[in-house]
Image (cartoon, rainbow, N blue to C red; front, side, top):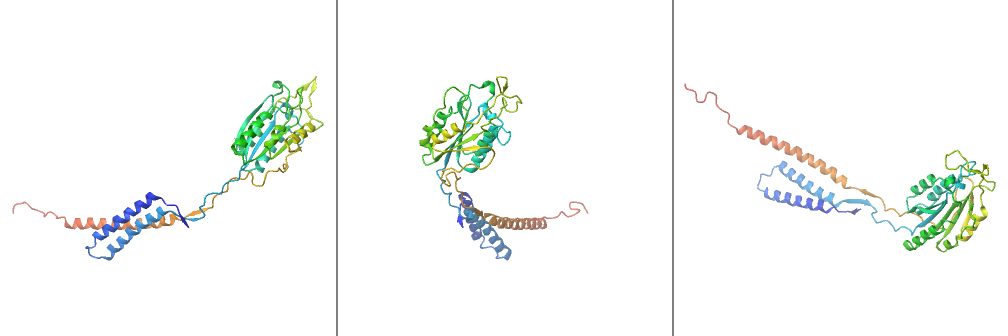
Length: 335
């Protein structure tokens, strides 16, 4: 048992106790009737119960929570170019549906970690700054969709390298003890007339990296935007997007991570993050409040005191009524 004192309640209880003791001493000269003595003890018990409630006893461990591990920071880079709408994931689902499923799994696998999300299409943007709200990250990935084809300027799968490096550098400055994971989600299809930039500049800040590839080598057509029903065409026929595993494997090698071809929802590859790196802070021990027991007794004694007070009030009224003279009939009349 330990105590969490509420000082103003304790002070109020001690003041009431002092006043009650003073009244008892002043009443010593009164006839020692049993009812009077019991009344004194009830009042004194009420005052002491107020003090006990103010002491606020609790049962159980009340030590502060243990410090949380340094944690993990996860930077997720999502390709949302038009090719991520190609319908060759888990049957005929768009590739971006696989991204949504895997991001939700990633959040589940790393409870308590901080996540940041970069989206890339014509350019790259940090859409979700570092947050521990994994549900918000999963919800964003589920709603991200893909770039409308008429607005495309070509796909550069490395356009988000600078933003990823900035986030990782910020993570290292803010939390040098944290572990860092980079996750790339895309199909590796580079459609601009230059090769993608290297991701090697990220490796120095990483403990591990995952490159998740979506699509098939046979390829599939894609709608111009989610739910449009219109498909991207090229030279009069439906355009087909193909998975480029060689490019994705190169990104994995540059970041010191590993590549995984994602064809359907399922477990993600294990990472090199230490066990517990993304664990949430340890909760403090549970405690049980016991002040309410004293409060129940106090309520009972207050009820006794109230009932006793009502009885005394009635007796006093009765005594006053007996002492009031009644007028004599015919007073003031002549004989």
